[in-house]
Image 1 (tube, helix red, strand yellow):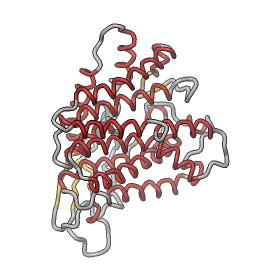
Image 2 (tube, helix red, strand yellow):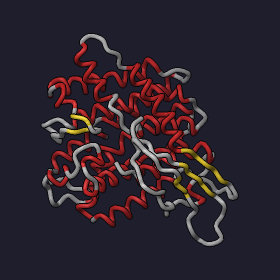
Image 3 (spheres, helix red, strand yellow):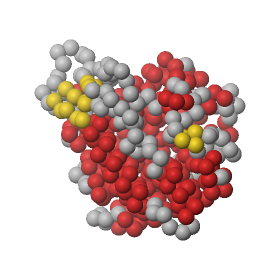
Image 4 (cartoon, one colour):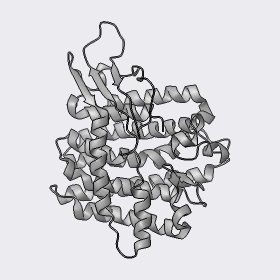
Length: 355
């Protein structure tokens, strides 16, 4: 996997003497893909004992880099196997070009982590994990087209339509969408047919006219609208970005065997990190360079899009990100500390990522 920080996360849940947050310590930063820092990050300000469990006197060390490398490598191998080169070669090459171009693999890893939270196996979640990444990649391929965001750079490489042409990029994206559902239906093993149907319904809802597409069309229609308020902006981001993240988590939870109440808790977690992801994206767009991001920086400003920094400013946007991160972690109260550690770490990673 390209770009992963060497992040050791120490979660100290010992009850503090004073009302101060516990420590989430970042050690040994060294990266290729999860962004690099010259010194360890400071203590996360909003991480508290009750964020995971009511238990005290417990200390957990979680190696975030190792976890992400292990999971992403397995996801990459599964994606490689899922899209093999066959006739017509051009469409397969186009699909593989974008699908295997790297990236953080946050969505598939969330699916796996959510499944394992409830005692499920990685292999059970892998088909939905791959499907989530296929659909995410499809959305990027279409989003980069001249008729949409007209972007030339994605993950540090020319966008799909710049390499294969607009017509092929559209068709490859369509093929990826179809493959995602086919992959779930044919490759998911060891669970009931009812669970498979539930995850297919969940994914369809996440990306359809109630989810990703809804956010995209409202976003498109809102360009240049200086009167777009926070409520409408939140709708765009909860639909366009958060919905697929939510779907990724919920699919994993369903396959892992979570009950309705448990699935709802991780759904709320996912909604928070989904919106958080976009708030941080908005901040990065105005604070980082294209080289640092691996994609065109400042494009929202050029397109006159409404963003959180534009509406409430950079500092208020950072405060909102902190609030969302705390709310996300609070949803993990009561779950097994060790099994919840990946989801906790991912929430903090999303909040503090640099690209």
